[in-house]
Image 1: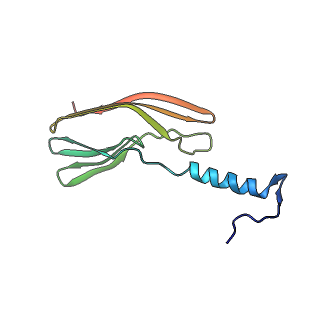
Image 2: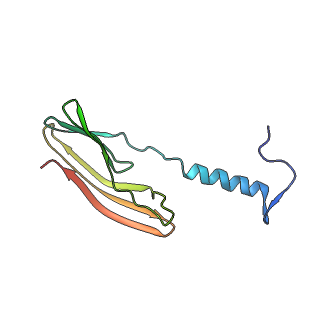
Image 3: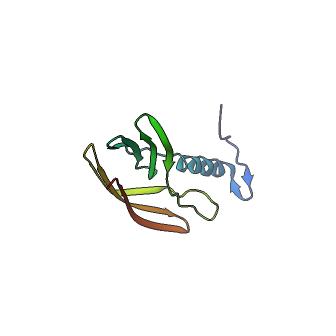
Length: 123
């Protein structure tokens, strides 16, 4: 099965092959890449997971009871699409009964360039 025929077809002045390549490149860019494993945090009976790739605090539990599925603050562009965060300077100090997490985030897309420093602590 051929994705691209040998004959050149046009799509509003752009070759059919180029249009296919652009579509493949766009779909590849939208595929999320996982860089880090989620980070388990504990403060006494309270547990949660920090997903650094998506800047998402997930599965907040007290003992066996989930009290909150997740907290995040996505940055959106003018089309309401989420601008992927890039986390840097991630520091985790987990002591079993307490924790501190700090990090920097950059969200950059065509017309969006948003940066912030954040963190969470149980103290």
